[in-house]
Length: 132
Figure 1: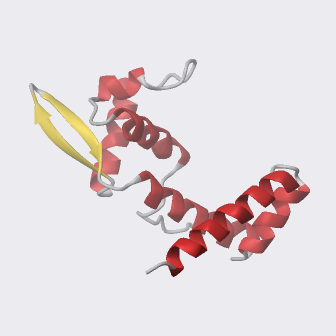
Figure 2 (figure 1 turned 135 degrees about the vertical axis):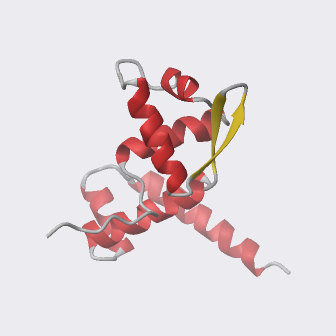
């Protein structure tokens, strides 16, 4: 059975284009193509189709200037990252952020030193919330 796609989710290819737009600001199809990593070759029409799809999903707005559309994100990087992280935690770790952290420790992506640094950041953030 085919799963229904969620318009809030970005595919890896869509995310790649969104990253170019988040970093570079409003861009034409050609400008987005120039922002692709070395060796990543996509046809102009493929990039154009993907940008139009993102526009239909309301992830981008577009403005016509001098016969070319300029595309600009309507969703922040932080919001998209939050949604992707929420999906990953739900899909890979049964909704448990603790299991995510344990997996990062097990695979040595998170060291004890980095964990202590993160604890300090969390403590600093919590103390700022308590200030009037």
